[in-house]
Length: 183
Image (cartoon, rainbow, N blue to C red; front, side, top):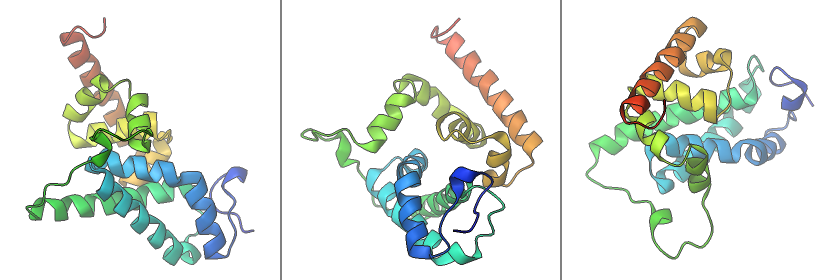
């Protein structure tokens, strides 16, 4: 095993297929939830998830371990999701989320993630914030990345991330107070 990432927990094998299996087991849900957060469509999120792990597999030997594997995969997920969003805007196709249709007996990953996003109401207000604010809120609170890791993911200085996080909390709190949802 070669050290990959900043802590003992993030050690992965050198061999790409073994590392891929570990990454998928450890971070598969995170990648899927993050893609869904950006895209809002289960099928597109699943496509992105597959593409993320394919890219990770192909680039595993060039991963230097300067960041955690979780951070690296999150960055890839965001990049691929943004690419899909650009592509989605240029097509007339309207994707649907079959998870919302009746007859789905099992809770999907997205539904569980949204449940953790404080029962949809707060998520609605988070999503109304400008993209650079809701992005840092999601990465900090729901992906549980540090501000340093978020800075790597969004390719911005850590101070900028802390500022965005502070401003996002202020804006969200103001909006929730305005709606009478918090004091």
